[in-house]
Length: 436
Image (cartoon, rainbow, N blue to C red; front, side, top):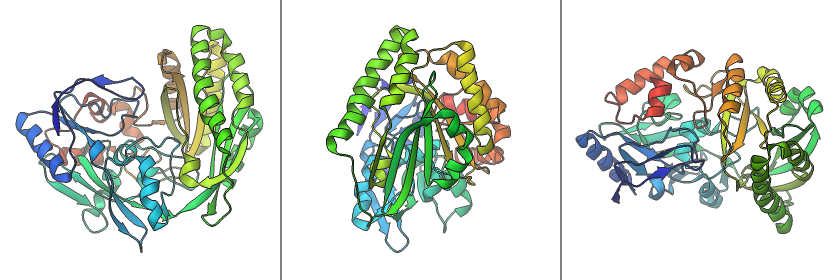
C-alpha cells in the first residue's frame, strides 16, 4: 500500500516530519520494491515501527516505510528454542505468538509497545546484571540493503556481521525478519516497595548481584527509592497475580490518571513538585505478586513524557547518580518525574551501549509539556564526564566526533555502512549527526 505523505510524529512529540511518500509493505518483496523505487527516484528511505524513540533515529524525509503490516511469526525451531519474527511485530504481540511453543523472550524492557526491529536497532534493554539488552537475543536477521537485495546474517551466512546488524541503528538496511534465541516460558516473582534511598545506594552492588532483575526509581526532592526486585521462577510455579481491581488502581488510577493530574499541577505551579513527589513515593510501588514474565516486565505508560538515558560502567552508577542528585538540589529545580536506574550485562555488539563492560543506566524524564532542555543538558554533561554512552533512541546531543572514542568498533561499523549503503539511502539528520 502506498499513499502520499502526511505528517508523522513520534510518541513523545519530539519529532515530526512530512515524508514525500508513505508505504505500508506487507511482505519482504514489497519492502524490496519500495527500496528499489526510492533508489530510482533518488529518495532516502526509512522504516518505522511504533515511533517510541525520543530521538529522530526513525525520521523519514523521503520515503517512510510503515512496518505495521509486516508482522507475525515466520518459523519456530522447537529444538533450539529459536523463533523468527517479521520485523514490524510489536513486543506486546510476541508472548501470545510464543505461548503455544512454551517459549518466552529472555528479558524485556518496561515498555512493550515497540516493534521488534525498532527495539533491537536502538539498543532497548531491560534490567538484570546477568542479562543483555534485547539485541543480544538476536541470532539471525534478514535485511534489505540499499541495492534492494536481501542480506541474511546468521551462524551460517555472514556470521561476522551479526554484531553490527543486530543493533544497526537503521543505518545498514531495512530489517524484514529477526531470529531470536528464546528460553522456556517462566514466571517472575515481583517485590516492589519504597525503601530509604541512602540505604539502597549504600547496598546497591549487593542488591544488583543478588537479584535476577533489580532497578529503582527516585522521585527528586524525596529520600525514598522505589525498588523493583524480580526473581525468575519456572512456569510450573504457583501464580499469585494482582487482583484486577488492585492492578487497575495501581496502573491506571495512580500510574495514569493521578500522575497525569500531578504533572499538570506541577507544570502550572512548580513549587508543588516536592510535595507531589513525597506523596507519590508513599502511594506507589508497594506490592508483591507472581505472574508470567511478560506481564511483570512491562508496564503501561499512560502519561506522555520525554527521556534521556546514559549507560555507564556499573561502578560509575553511584557517583553519577549522586552528582545528578546534587545538581537538582543546587539548581533548585522542581522535577516531578522520577530518575530511573537499571543494569545490564556486558556484550560484544558493535554499537551496544553495554559493549565491553557491565553497565548501569541512569535515565531522567520530564513531562512532555515541560521544557526538558536545561535539565537534560546538565545531566548529559555529568554522564559524559563518567564516560557515558547515550541510548540511541533517547534524547541526547552527542555527535560522531564525541561518540567515536566511546565505541571500540565505531570505525568498523562506519566502514560496513559505507559498504552496504554507499549512497546513504537510509540516511536522515540523526544518523548524519551520530555516525557522520
